[in-house]
Image (cartoon, rainbow, N blue to C red; front, side, top):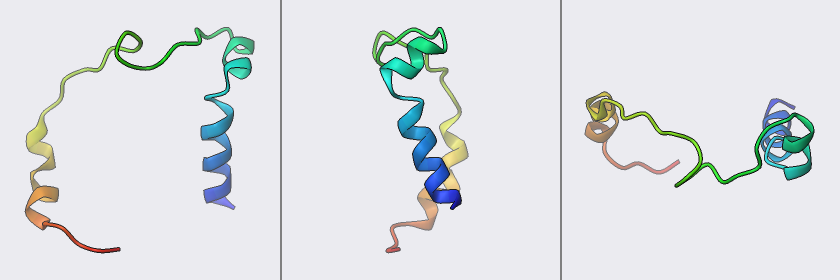
Length: 55
């Protein structure tokens, strides 16, 4: 059920009519939409060191 609710919310909150109803601007997130703050890529080092693996 948790996976379904996450999928539902992803679809619901990307619907143009829903965004307009919430008073939000309907626009793509990138490149001219939201500002992306730069981060510290060193935080990903443990993931890179882990290497590739299959799920």
